[in-house]
Length: 218
Image 1 (cartoon, rainbow, N blue to C red):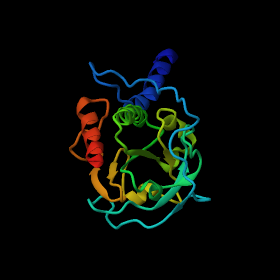
Image 2 (spheres, rainbow, N blue to C red; image 1 turned 180 degrees about the vertical axis):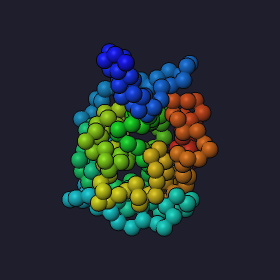
Image 3 (cartoon, one colour; image 1 turned 60 degrees about the vertical axis):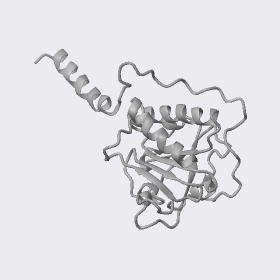
Image 4 (tube, helix red, strand yellow; image 1 turned 90 degrees about the horizontal axis):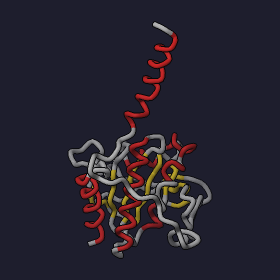
């Protein structure tokens, strides 16, 4: 085989793993819009009750069962637009408002796409005066690329650490969704391994997640 053909095969197999991670919207469904310009200096209410370093607290034995209390963790908010950018806080500071938490990894194109669609959804909810917090927990090994997520939205992106292991406290995997009420009690869990469509680039997946969020606000 010529050197030229060997080079073509090498480039093909180098691209395949990346392509497998990226899911484009199906035909007929428009892509999410670019993030809007932010007129305010920052997004969200300022949180004063913050920690000095990431830490883990109590977690229920079965955090994915309906009625379970949200795990206690405190992580850095890596959303540059947040009024709490690089402050260390967690779900206890969100009690009083329903909250959706999703586990994503900044190194995967599908997670980046999910973030953009969640940004669109959050904007729709805000415009309709539906008060629900959105939060992403980025996988611990994604710290160096966390901006791949936080640059695609305006809501908090918490950076997990091996020491805290918030993913482990939630007993979750990538793309899992958790829906907590105003008291921090789990009302719905949508698994990445379940039968429910979660790809937000599809009409069905977008509706599934949005309806779960709206159910929190009722």
